[in-house]
Length: 137
Image (cartoon, rainbow, N blue to C red; front, top):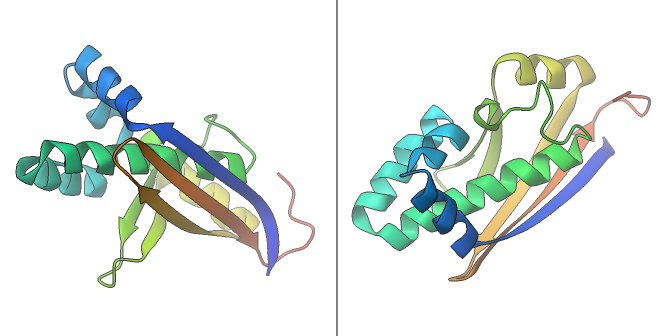
């Protein structure tokens, strides 16, 4: 495996809260994929703060991933095409869908992600890897 790219993102949770307030909660629907949205609603039902932290970490992971693959937020990288979910052990993993999944498969790109949050901040780090040392962006 060769490193294709790396990305990191740090976000202030209060900024996400402000966007949620400004959009009457629609920001979560715009950014989260269907599996993430289910987890978000469940966490938010138990604790508003935990729901917000979940949203912030997932937003951060999407930003870090877009940097790692070198596209930024440009097609085929879209908010909802990439989800960060958790294995039963709690380990986070990336799940791509649609045109983004096809784009990644064509290039043999896989990714590892780590996320963390505290009361004020959420952070993520992504390492994109490829089997080919000559993969082109």
